[in-house]
Length: 155
Image 1: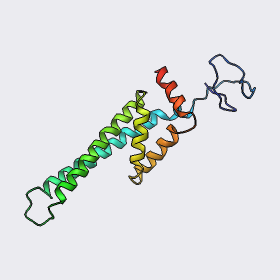
Image 2: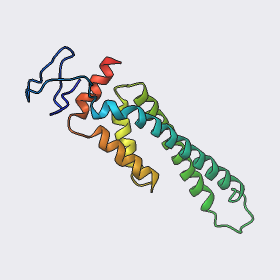
Image 3: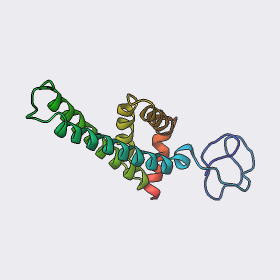
Image 4: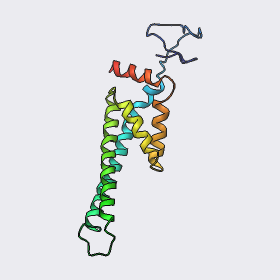
């Protein structure tokens, strides 16, 4: 629970904020991490699904149109290049899915994985950039590590 005026942490039975002296009334204010971690987990799962679809489509294109044994119409490097990009997208999708599930289940390792995946997603315009910025805003705010660790221990 947090003070509605200054945002400092309060005990469950505290009626007056020790930092600013204002009375704690009615509504309990959640921290930024508590308010956004569920939505963040859902968005990472959705992002993972889009990445997996893109990886599967690219893998199919690499093996059908630019097959290994093409008739010479296409350069020989396209098949391994497209296959490599597809595998990268599929691995990224798997890690994004793991990150989203970890955030929803409030695992201790999920914050670190989400931050790493957010840095990778920043390069993927426009949705990856938006998700990366949102993830960094939620999980890198002041005292976010303490707030997330508190969520992990309470889960």
